[in-house]
Image (tube, rainbow, N blue to C red; front, side, top):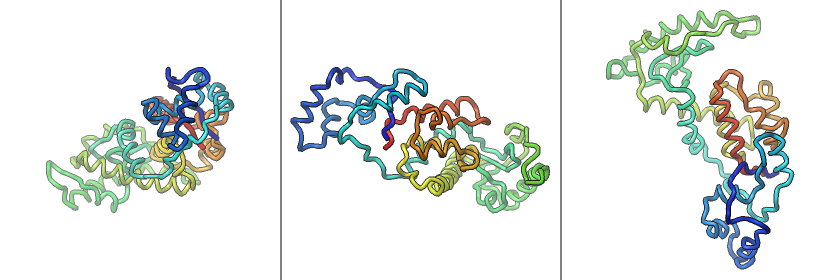
Length: 287
């Protein structure tokens, strides 16, 4: 099923598109997609935007109507199905950093985990010790790392003890991250922040590929959103995201129970939810 395009009109495409048809008819031995791109002098994204139907409004019904009335696009099909996890990571690093506001010190998150950088979990000693910590402009010694780890571990261990019979936390940590800014002198560099973030995203991408066997063929915008949800919430499981999983399985982008309606998260800011919804609106097509 082809998803509709949100926008872009072109003054070059109007009426019955006789010019477009004649161009194709005169170049039957050429790739029509490449020829159209040359003829219009537009980017690949704008070509797709011009060809696919445009919703008249910004609501689910308008998107669904456009989807139901899509025009014949002939042989113009998507070819960028080869998945590059590095490209996914690199395009999401600035997004995550913008949303997470990386910190160079150790803090404790809402679920009592030792954390640093852009949400890097450093809760166990082995992970903590592998971080390239700096102290007053030099590399921290293992003894200095251990002393700092033990200090924070007393706090996190106590916080994690308050659970119900199923092991669910009864009380979250309500301290803001900056509360911990002067609790330790250990710091990480911006390069170390990026390294930890890449490692985090690499693990999250592997998780998504296990959860969604067809993840490589998903539109890049949907890949972006799923990776952000995984990074931010910890999972995109059937138990926690049944409606989203169902919409993805059905390739339902803009229907009443579509993906657009089910990427909202309760415990994140409006800007992050708005970003996710806009990513879905930007999907040009999905076969």
